[in-house]
Length: 212
Image 1 (cartoon, rainbow, N blue to C red):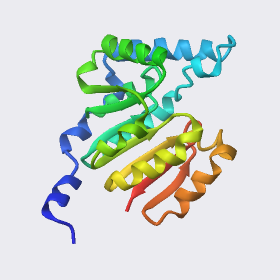
Image 2: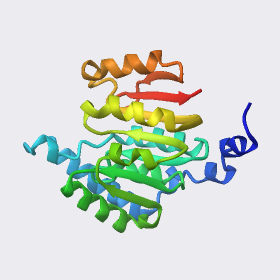
Image 3: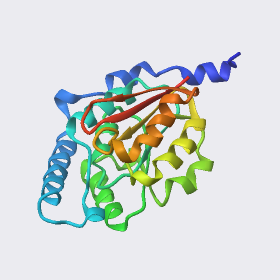
């Protein structure tokens, strides 16, 4: 039986549902989004080394994530793999504080610039380091977006799922375009009795998990 404390944490703040502003995204956020889209496009064409490329999500994935976050239950909001902060900008439209993890110094610098120029630095906690090393201190996760190196997906999944509140969401990118590499963790999630899960054909494919 759920405690009163647990029930209260499950409630979604109705005010957050009004935070999405797709038709009136603040100019500072929109300008930074467009700048990062240009950088990402250039990276994919000019031979930039793989680890230096931004490899960010497409806009349709950003919109989908923002809508999901707006309706996610109360709890911590995590992003594993900040890159230059493009997906964080989309998530910020839901009006909730976000903790995002990145390990590469160049991308950390870009992300700091993103949050400063977009005017959302007060809403974002950027952690320079391995998310897995910080996960023990994280409690009651309402939403997590995973978009990091594919070899750590399984470890991140196992670290995050026990931390999810009831109804909490875990989304992992590249579930279709890297399906062969990610098949073991996709199979794990689809068979995991702790979550309801499916692969959603948005952008490059998202593994969608909801804690039961």
